[in-house]
Image (cartoon, rainbow, N blue to C red; front, side, top):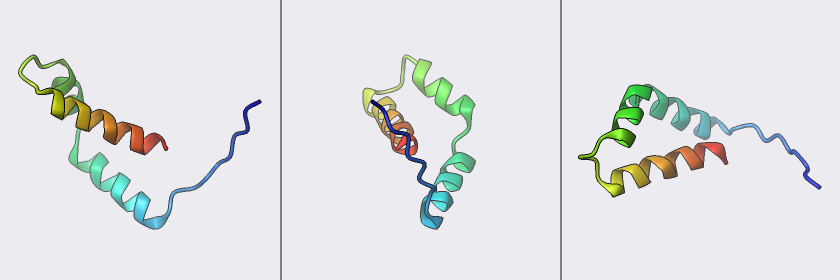
Amino acid sequence: IEIKLVCHLTTRQRWLYQAVKNKISIEDLVYTSTSSSSTNATTSSLMNLVMQFRK
């Protein structure tokens, strides 16, 4: 059984979300994830950021 509970972002979360969205473009994310010169730390950091937005 799964219960879906909608929780709206707080003012601070919305502000941080917008700041990150405005600073990082989709092209940058795609380039970083496909670039052979990117480090695992950078990719891991971006994935952590994406997961935090999903929470």
